[in-house]
Image (cartoon, rainbow, N blue to C red; front, top):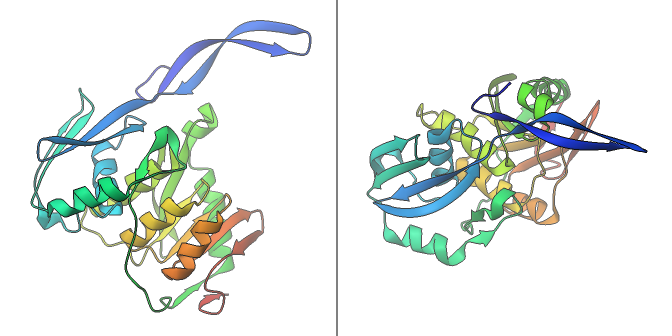
Length: 259
């Protein structure tokens, strides 16, 4: 079962009054470095797949790049787990990220930048209850890697009641960046898509969704108080604890139409 995403390791398992040596399957973790204009910008702990998508998604979701026109060259070095971007962007974006960055609640002490701006109202949105429940059920069945290791989060894009792409990572932040980067690389916009997540929705996940243009997040897990506050402030619909036949709506109670 040894492959690029998994490793087989020896463990010692204890049960009641006995113990034994066994093998177990664990998810593989690497450190991936993003360089901007020949300088190391950040290192991310990640699953070694969809690395270019991770980089694109991260830079867009953190507001470092805002258009493909700002990137003149990209070179992915898979062997050394790094990617080099040549960009024509204001240095203030990088300096602001470094000055306002916050340690996130995600894996490997990731960083997230602050968010600014103002949104006046929620965008009109109608969605079926069955779409929410069925999408989450299908989404959770989609990860064989989670079934084998229990060591990944997943994120997906839902559009027109169809899940278009599901990607795993060791961190929920990376999973969101990877699936977003997958779409952005195809020059597709995300403002008519819904973000699905298996992970907890904390403030930095909401910030990413706002910057990327998602109107709605749907999660299997819990939300935090700051995530809800930001979602209200920036008019992002937030649905979580999708379990069985129920779910919770946390924002936009009178604006969203759930039928």
